[in-house]
Image (cartoon, rainbow, N blue to C red; front, side):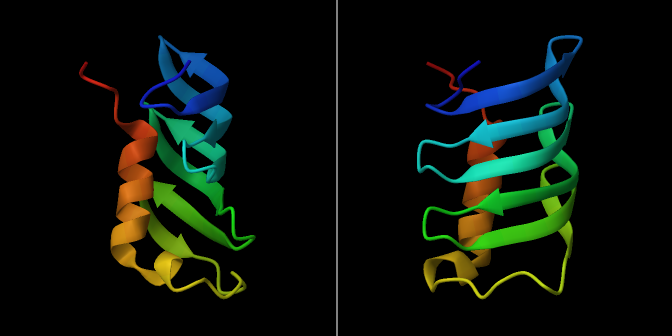
Length: 96
């Protein structure tokens, strides 16, 4: 299933993305982890094309705890706004 150019590979419950998943965004950023009700939820990692990653525990699409051993990020990826954009893009359905 694709939304806004993204690709979802994973489990569904009642037609919603839920369970273990791999989510590939158009930017080639990849989320691997748990989903619930169409959002990042539980343990999961964002892998950026630059090679850096963001390991976190997610709740309703937001990172609530970041593992201390996450690698150093590039300038763009240090921006909380960039993470919000990635999170929003990963769960927002096109209204076209």
